[in-house]
Image (tube, rainbow, N blue to C red; front, top):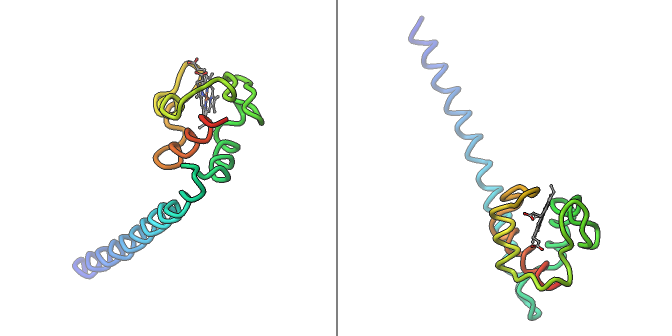
Length: 114
Ligand code: HEC
């Protein structure tokens, strides 16, 4: 009787394990559509950058990058690397790594061009 219970518990673990694997596939998909965004001479995807800015940065840097809680981000000659390091390291009022990876690089390149 006790052995049967253990066998049941074991197969329940297997089912849970299989569900966990499914989540990883989704993460792989989101990386894939970045490949095509490099056409047209610009090294960033402005639409994606704007979208990410709107949901992650706008509340502190303003709708038109004019500054709010955080400083103005347009017209001040910030380089992509400066913006990227700010995103990665944060600052006095700004959290580090609000966005990461290709998304952060894309937004940094876009802001540097504003
Ligand atoms: C919670 C508010 C907040 C959010 C959200 C926020 N920032 Fe900031 N940001 C600040 C503050 C405050 C500073 C000034 C920090 C300092 O002087 O150390 C700053 C500074 C910066 C700077 C440096 C500007 C300069 O002139 O040196 C950059 C670049 C920047 N933020 C980009 C971003 C980006 C990109 C995002 C979105 C991914 C973002 N910030 C989200 C508050 C925020």
